[in-house]
Image: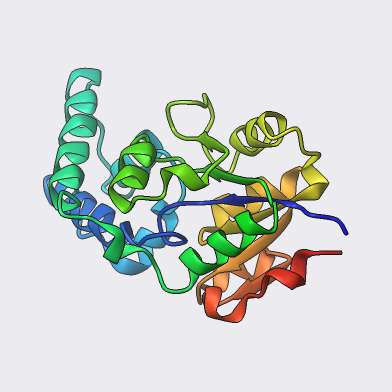
Length: 214
């Protein structure tokens, strides 16, 4: 029987911190007189903090100097960390915990690739760190999703060929990154942008481990 390596995104797949990212970016956007909508926020999912700010500045049709740019990145992160300060195991999304536990018992290698530089901090708060054989985050890569660098790194660190990896993502950027190197991509959620994935499910309640065992 063939056991693929599972690579999980964090926000929107394991826990829902996307709401807190949205609230933090909404506050930042207001400083440029730009109203960030939930629809536009979809384009911020799965990409790095600096790429998010670049997009917002473009939408607001404005520019800032490097000093203010770096200050905003730091303030956004502080806003976000304040919002998730009470995060705990109760914030793990439904059924994903059971899926991970079952996968570990069946000897699947488990990895995480998140564009967030706070990924390890969040995993610790959720009490999930010990499940992951490899963790790749925003501190590990030079290029964020949709560039496949992080997935390539996860593949190499787990000694797994890309085609033997299954990626769980809730963003089009993450799906594009996995598709680029022939990983099997699974979209989690109801966004129309996920249709580029190999398979799409609304949540882990629809996913069974045996689907990926050959």
